[in-house]
Length: 162
Image (cartoon, rainbow, N blue to C red; front, side):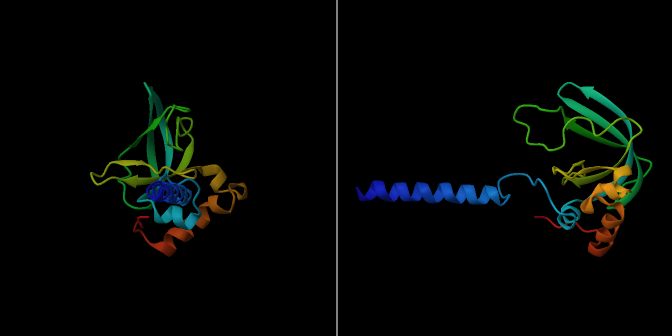
């Protein structure tokens, strides 16, 4: 009897621990972040124009021409090619799905680099902004380009890992 009660208590503790950690973001990708945390967690922030959007099976290939680097380093002459899963793909844990926009649209894109230097869109609800909205007041407090530039200047260029 005592052994089964102990097992039950351990099981309940582990269940509560798992629920607690998942609610704090320890077991899932970040979703909504304030501007400070968003800037901290990325390696590269660029203003770019979408040049081409191509469907390649389950993946969409987004080719962007970088116009300005706000944080990090990227050669302006090199196109930025970002692969995103098709929308509503079962089991996808990505907030960023489908094309990043229509060709010729301008975006502010938040990116991370893996140890090999490969760049991908940061998996967050706020990782791709419409450039035009970010320069107008309707972008919201955390979606204004001038606020973003001030935050980058305040923090510097280094990425802070969560």
